[in-house]
Length: 130
Image (cartoon, rainbow, N blue to C red; front, side, top):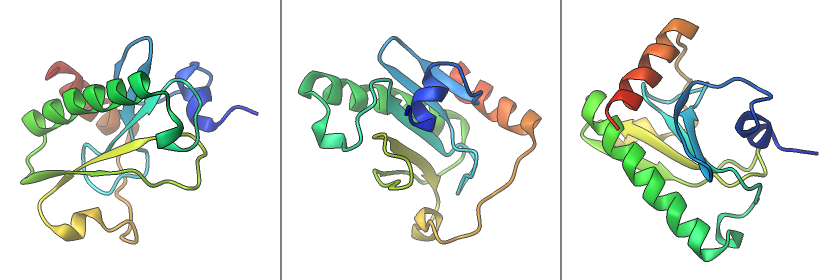
């Protein structure tokens, strides 16, 4: 059975898309720690990030870098936190999280809520900075 991220990449489930090409997809986390919290995935369904074929793996990080630079242009933050966690979805993904303190990367914190319109506006701002 396809993961939720594969279903998002295939267009079966909607997302707040930031960027996409033939191999990768970046979209807003719907349970964000901070405004602009973005997930970057390979479209190929691979669970463990280091099982991704070397060229695809390198390209994933290059794609994530581009997204991170765009986030930094439009979301006020001191740093952009990067983490690869997410055991709940067996599909490799990178979290890009704007942060102003170490506390901003604490996944135990309550998640932020945004309206669909606010999510769309955030995704559009990041996409426009690419």
